[in-house]
Image (cartoon, rainbow, N blue to C red):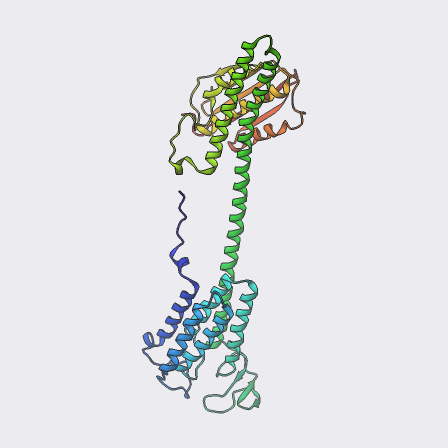
Length: 427
């Protein structure tokens, strides 16, 4: 039974919780860090030192927590409520001053999370909302970057004033970065961070989808190869034995009986192989706790003698020649080697119109195994449909970083050869 790994702790925390935590930090900052005192370097003589409106502070916190709760469902409304709560709590704790960066912490966190999780249109609207509020706020406090200010500390017009409209003054002084101006910059940075997180997640999702598609394609090809190699040889043997039984059923009933027995054996083996493959698709042996038994053991070169005997009994003699000492091979190499020989013999039976074929297995080198299957038939390279088996064999060898060749021989017949490396040598 597969177990899905748990998400990291930081990813398990909901977005609204992060916004609520940021709000708590921004509210506690004046009391913990500043000791309840106002930010004198941000305020002007009109500010009320130590001013705290607890009723307004409580109401603003309730609004902020409510906004955090609906952040995922109503992102724009949530950000608007957080901005309203920020303006209110700033007036409740540090009146008549610019918005400090600590007060905008919850706004920036919410903007970053909305940008990372919501569609691009929603994230751009959220950024526009925050920027409009902050830039508008710049015109209502002294020392701002757009040149619009309400008054100077001593009540006199600001340097470079062009004209005065009501209590606003338009100046030509060079822009500079003030506290609220830094808030605008921080909002843009928060939006960029959220956008980067979203793009990174989308890239990861695309790569995961591609890897999953490649894995599915590889598994589909593997199943197709196994199905072809399992069925093709047995069906060829069945066809030959059935034809032989039909020809001698009246004159040699004993031969017909033997042929039918071979057909039964081939059918049972094919059904067993298909049942094993379907079982592997449903559940792996490790998950199901099934121990490896002869019924579930994948075929290998140990089954080569039985394969040769069955094919010979069907009318095509198979001569097997070993070079070097027979030794156990890694399971994947052993299976691939057997499948190559099995498919090659099946092609001889079905297409070559030959009476015999030769199989050579070379195990003289410790770091590779080489096989060769030849016949003196008419060849089968141009037979319709015969390419699927050869394509599957080539894929098997390629996956094991080996070499594969198949084609007609100059002296007649067909030749299939493969060299498969053995990592670390055969055990």
